[in-house]
Every structure is written in structure tokens, then in C-alpha cells.
Image (cartoon, rainbow, N blue to C red; front, top):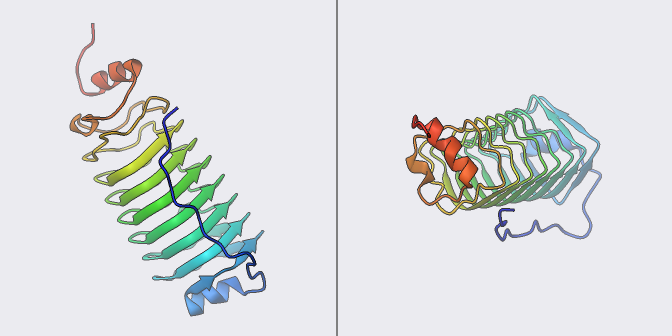
Length: 214
């Protein structure tokens, strides 16, 4: 199993507020702090530069939401559906996604640091041009995700499905991919310089690069 990196834990206060009009706070105040949100549907909110700090979302479904340039700090998402949300150019620090749906979510050009994605479905998720530092992907489905020209620093993939994902022009040096599925990933070859792969994976990757193994 690939070794996970040391990620700073989400910091939440002992008593979180539960009596807040979530949608009004996001739409009009553009700020949400120290709040516990459970079993909610949050829909059709398209706001830029929202700040969410010290919050815990559980069993929350977001639909039709657009949070460009969001600032997320010390936030925990558990059993949430954040599919197709646009977080482009966001600042996301000390955040944990546990058993979440992130299908088609857009993290492109984001600054992600001290993040844990755990047992989450993140197919078609876009991390293009993102700065990703101290981030763990643990038992996640990242099929057909995009890491085009992203900057990976202290990043771990453990038992992930990375099939058909795009790593073009992304340096994978030092990243252990041996226990992840990497069938049909997109790259030209230079990305693998210093990456850790298995013998079986090496044979498959050689085929992807156009070589014939006999």
C-alpha cells in the first residue's frame, strides 16, 4: 500500500452552531463559520469568494451550485454530494472529504493544501493547473479525472482508481502508484520520471507510449 503523507487535521471548535439559515448566509453574507449542517439540500447558489471556516457538513447535497474563488478552511464533508460544483481558483486548506461524491467537480487552478479525500467517488474531477500540496487520495475512484499541468508536492494515491486520468505535463516524481489502477492514463512519458510503479504497470505503460514488448 502506498504510504499516505502527513496531513494537518481539520480544526473545529467543540460546540458548532446548528441554528443558522445556511442559504442566506451563503447568498447574502458570503460567510459561514463554526456551523454544523446535517441532512440539508443546498441548491442553486452561485456566488464568488464565499468563505467557509470551521464547518462540518454531514449528509448534505449540493446541486446547481457555483463557488468560484471559494475560501475553505477547516471544513469536514462527510457523506456529502458535491458533484459538478465549480471551485475554480479556490483556496482550500485543512479540508477532509469522507465518503463523498465529487463527480465532475472542478478544482482547476485551486490551491489545495492539507486535504484528505477518503473513500470518495471523484470520477471526471478536474484538478488541472492546481497547486496540490500535502494531499491524500485514499481509496478513491478518480476514473477519468484531470491533473493536466498540476503541481503535485507531497501527494499520495493509495488504492485509487486512476484509469483514463490525464496527467499530461504533471511531474509524478516520488509518487507511489503501485497499488492504484492506472490503465489508459494520459501522459507522454516524461511525467513518470522518478515515479514508483510495479513491473506489471511498467509493461502496460510502455504499450501506452507506443513501444512493443516481446
